[in-house]
Image (spheres, rainbow, N blue to C red):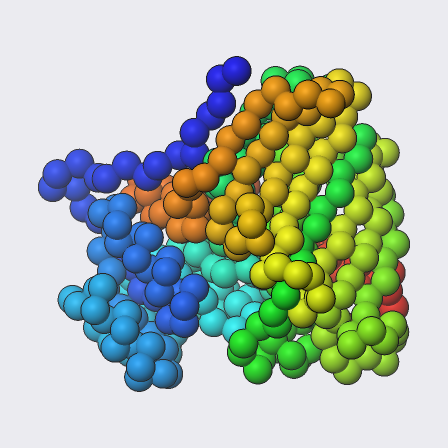
Length: 348
């Protein structure tokens, strides 16, 4: 069976002009994505911005020629071709729109917005500015998920009628803003569930969501309309326009017996496919194709996937800054997330 390998961004031709990129937010994830983009050779890193001097100093080791700054506004004053945003979630939509209006393409950490309204406004700004916009939905570029995409496209599963999506993290986020609804927009659904919901909708061709039923908890207590804290456990049943049903289960700080459990099981009329983290790892994944009790295909680690989406954005930016209509699908993803919270009675 022929499996498609994840795309590896090509380096630009010798002497080719490279886009100038600034980075805003240089915590662990921001620095990791910065190094992934730097490794492609597709872009020139011209600015680094973070109010934390320690984060700036650490990032400068990998990009010593970049100007150290504190704010997005200072970065935009340098007129970069693109901006990478890895700040707290509440800032994403406004910072994305500001960068786009200044003429810069944007690569933003998820979520692009705390709700579908913010996401739609950011996508509209990208379209109006005719600038490339992408979000770091990084699990798409794992070799295991690409293999499952190939199996589905080749008809190996037949019609996919159901999927089970699980993301349990034995730890909670280590940044205080994650626990402030105004800043985060939600809890484990926004932080973890978004990745697997994105994978399912993407692999199944974005068929649209017909209905959602969900329940959310914090500390074992069921959350409702007056919740003032983010959820740390969520269960949702999502019926697609095709009639297929997705079951999403995600959590922080679950008594798990491992660091993490990350899984997607796709059930089809001709076969099934599974995506699994190995040994409780956050980074090592395998995929299997199933037919009855037999396993007919396998893809597994090693796979250095974490920075591939960012690297791909930089490569595309080196070719064109123009708007990519693929950004439009960020809106129905955000609407599905809104549906989970609305079904649970959470007002956001």
